Length: 188
Image (cartoon, rainbow, N blue to C red; front, side):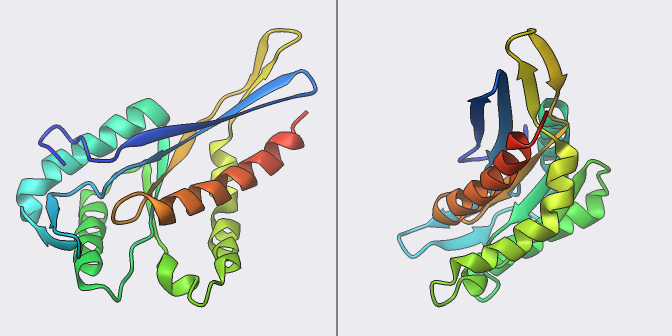
C-alpha cells in the first residue's frame, strides 16, 4: 500500500449477463491487504513495514476510496492462520478494521486452505451461504434493454484478498459470482 491508500494487485471484475431483455451487471474487487507489508523471495516471506499509527491514515484513505466508488464493502480475507506470515498480515488487517471503526466496512475472515483441505472445495459453500444475505443486500445492476430503463443498481461490493490475490481469490470470487447469477436469473 502507498500513503494514498492504493494497494497492489487491485482489480475490479465485472460479470455481465443478458437474458430476456435484461442486462445485469455485478462488480467485485480484489486487492492486497491494505497495510504496509512486503513480501520477498519465492517462499513468500513477508514482514510488516509500518506500525498501526503510521498505517491507519492510508488504510482509512483506501476504505474511503472504495466506499466512494462501490458503496458498502464486505472485506473477505482468505489467508491461512497456520502460516506465520499470513497470520501476521491478517492480525494487522483485523486491528486496522477494528480500531478504525468504519461504518461501511464489514470484515469476514475465512481460512480458505484449512476449509478446503483434502480437495473439499465444496466447503466454501458454507461461507457463501453465511454471506448470502449481505451479498443480496448489495444488489446488482439491472437494465431493461427494451424499455431502456434502469431497474436496480448495485449498492455495495465484496472485496476479496488472499496473499497474492490469485488462486484463492479467483475461486472465492467465482463462488460469489454464481450466487449473484442465481439472483439475477430470478429477477423480474
